[in-house]
Image (tube, rainbow, N blue to C red; front, side):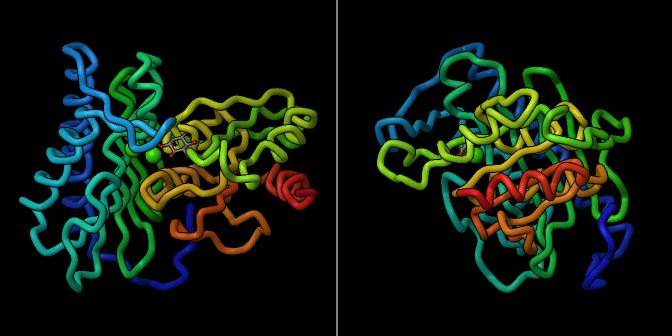
Length: 272
Ligand code: IPD
Ligand code: CA
Ligand code: CA
């Protein structure tokens, strides 16, 4: 579990309420996404390969409404609408209403709702809901991580030779030379296996659950990571930037691992 470096935490009772609201919002968002998967959805292009659907927007609306009706003054940062509610609250919700939109649009069942909560600028709560498998990942700072109520622990893999890794690629993969293909090639030759599943928040939960041993990606957005990093850390894992330095959800570089593999992963990333 995380050690308390700043001491800033809301009172225990209000933390229970925050968790309840986050879980309710994630389940409502997930139910809408699944309903759209069954009934059909509209796809728009943000650019050639970056999609958004009405499922993203409807889920976001339901999530934001749920949070706002409980906490009208809390700040909200959400993928499709940006900074929804500004202000001076110490709380900020960071939401990806549908992480894995490309998968969703193709009917590939690997997507989720991701809701993180910052307090005093630190992520203190993460809820990720996979509506296709009805898997609910929840973690609270200092209180551990659970999957459907069962405690989560990272894996014990001690070397890349024994590790199943996962990564992803940003939507500018065709235009930018800094597109992760260099790291992908190196890790493909070092790890036991390497996957690209297409939903970063879920990748992080799978590291927490020991299904993957390590994850890295660059150019991620705050809403891709805010919930998942708390879940990884509370499951006993480590998160950092590519140099092993402190991690920020606004930093766009993330390595998450079971801890034992971390330095070996950083060494591969250093090779550029
Ligand atoms: C994307 C997914 C994908 C990651 C991309 C993200 P979206 O989020 O998390 O796995 O590789 O970098 O943008 O667009 O499906 O919410
Ligand atoms: Ca996302
Ligand atoms: Ca999204």
